[in-house]
Image 1 (spheres, rainbow, N blue to C red):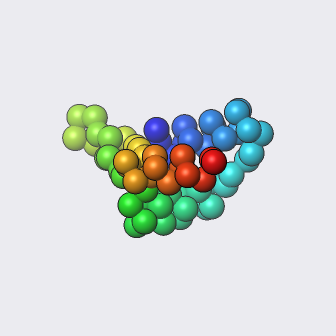
Image 2: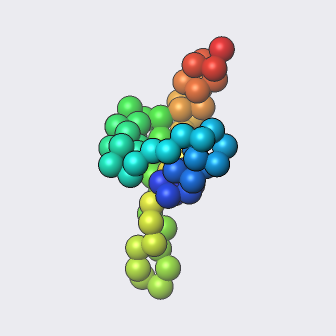
Length: 67
């Protein structure tokens, strides 16, 4: 999901309002840790955004944290 969609999800599901200035640096940090991977979305040669997805390591870390 994109950062924008992730922000909306946090607000609608958990009532947590996260600023973009907080969200995107955290996503970049998670990418450096290898728990999130990014895919650039494009349409007609134009960048439409970045999609974030949990990696296998990210899924394992999340399951461990939820225990």
